[in-house]
Length: 98
Image (cartoon, rainbow, N blue to C red; front, side, top):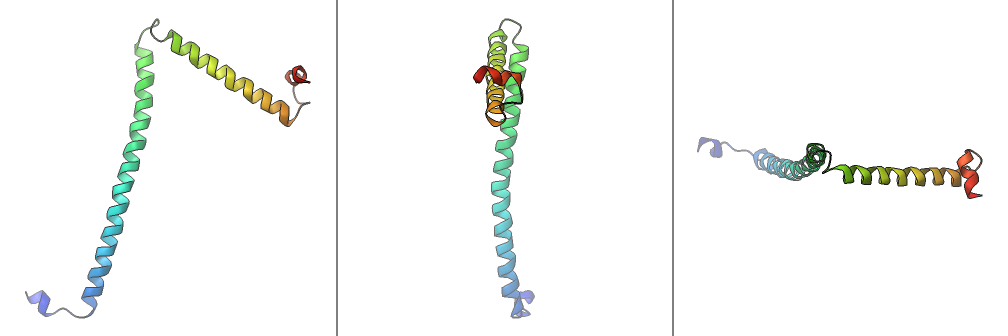
């Protein structure tokens, strides 16, 4: 009770600023931990998926490997085609599209 009797005018302002800082820090921690948790869950999910492919044996993941190679080929072809649009005389591959 002695603290309340000796309070001056600056104490309520200091208390209000302290509460505001605690609210801002609390909100940052709340949303920051959610973002961190979601990001970590996504990254670990990718590792879990890769581990499932590797541990599945040669028969179980052969189709997945074929799909990955097909997707990589499609992306590589799209990049080559985009390079032909940008600079048609840069590659012999671009001669097919003239």
